[in-house]
Image (tube, rainbow, N blue to C red; front, side):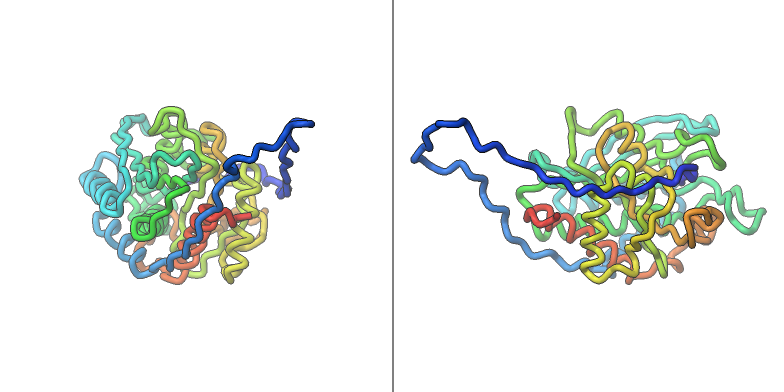
Length: 343
C-alpha cells in the first residue's frame, strides 16, 4: 500500500449553502396536490457488533495471504461474495487482468455488493481485500520475500464492511443506495517513491470501468488499517484535498459520538491509497479512514503502524474496540444520510 505523497495538503473546510428560486413572478399558485418532497424516514441506527466483525476478519485470515493468483485468493473471493449475497446484496464480481510492476499478470476481482441498486442517491463504502505479496518492511531481512497475512492492512476494513452489510440486510434502508466495494490488487505495488500507478490496481480498474454503466455516487468512504490497538485516524491530506466537506461531516459526527480519541482533528500529509484513484479518475469524492500514528506532518518515518508490510500483520494486532469505533461511525453516517440528518 501506499507510497507517501510528497505534498502535505492544506485543509480548507468550506461551509456552503444553496438557495432555491422563488418561482416565476406573477404566477398563480395551484390549489392542487402539494409536490413537496416526502420527509425523510425515521430509522434507528443499528448497534455495530464488534464480535461479529472480528469473526469476519478471522475468517479471512484463516485462508492465509490473499495474494492474487493463489488458491487462498480464490477461496476468499468466494467467501466474500457469498457473505454479501447472504446479507441481501446484489453481488457483482468484476473480473479483470492486470500486469503488476513485476511483470506478472494478476487475475483479480473487484467484489461489489449493491444495496438498493435502483436508488438514484448512492454512497460507496470500500476496502481492499487482497494482501501484499512481499513483507518488504519486515525487521527480519530473511522474511522480506514472504507474503503478508494482511489482517489489519486489508482484512480489518473488509471485516467492518461485512458487519455493516449484515446490519443493512437486517435493518433495510429504502431511500439510499449503498455500494460496498472490495477492491482487489491494491497492495501489489512497487516499493519506494515515484511509481504511484503501480498501486491500487483494482480501484484504478473500477474507476475506469464502473460495474454499472453511467454509475454515479455522491461520495465514498474507504477503510484501511482500521483494526489496530490504539488506532488514530487523523485527517489525511488526499481526503482533505478532494472531499473536504465529507471529512468535515464524518469527523464532526465521530467526535460528537464520543470517538474523538480515534478520530483526531490533526491534519497530516496525503497518501496514495484506493481513494486517490477514485477521486482523480472516477471523480467521486472519497475519504480515507486510515490509521496513521505519526507525531507530526514531517514525521514520515512513522507514517504507518509497525506491523505494516511485515509478517507480523496478524490477528494479534486486532482490537475490538477500534472495530466498534470505526464501524459505529460509518453506520451512523449511512443511516443519518438516509434520514437527511448528516450536515
